[in-house]
Length: 382
Ligand code: PLP
Image (cartoon, rainbow, N blue to C red):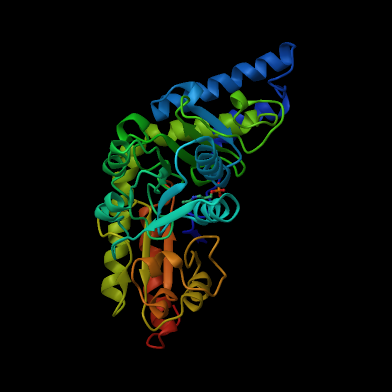
């Protein structure tokens, strides 16, 4: 089986598991306990926080460990919006993950916030002019994802953040898909808050990070024992913190090399599919895109049927985001990019890890071509 659904989740890396193991077995203390076992756990947690801060080029106090990307997005958006006395207007791109869009909907319904969703180009880039026009004196926060989870388009974060800062508006980014593939230097990106999820980069499910500038007021969502400087109560997941710190460090060490190899694989895959299937469309930006996501539409062929045919051929993939998979609604991301609903229903997303080989991608590329042709009724089953 060739697993090409890494944007949904990835396997835990061996080095990550090895780093976690002692923290689950012999060094299992509660960091709040006042004895040697607890103090040792607190030291390990501090070490993990410092490692993450080094990777993100921020202060350890800016790092809040969470249960994943969804919680990090919720904490950033609700936490910043509810803590700021100024304004009740939030800006976001129209192609955010549901973890962001549903949080905005909550703030709209229960707290009277006004939300403006910024339009994107047909390639999935936020229109900078639209952001400039939408910023107003009431704007309290702007949240724009680093890289899209369905089509892989990468936003020019630094310039978008700078535009917001000119108006004194803090900027949050959902970097869940970008982590491991793109630079995460928070100072260079100029972001005030950034969400990362462990299970997308070789750590287990249930661990995440919210970077949030420690001077930015943040209303906590979870109240209790005051852990994480009062920003996220609950006994800390020390093993999870070490896992995400280790995964970030490993990804960072090999990022340049892995990204270049992955871009070559992606481009081979895209070429093979576009040449092999009449009418196939690459969705997202042709170059400003993640190295590990290739996404297509195949007008006239059902996306669900392609998925099934492809799985029969030994390749596991997705028709869009994990959350949207299985739903018969066309992808809101593709609709926001201007695709017709009928075309959006034919979407296929292929995504992989740095461990996926050239041979696997080459095999998968051929399998996509034959599967789509089978669904279109113009080829025999591979
Ligand atoms: N944001 C993006 C862009 C994602 O792709 C995902 C997961 O698919 C999330 C947030 C949610 O992350 P988690 O699964 O860690 O809650």
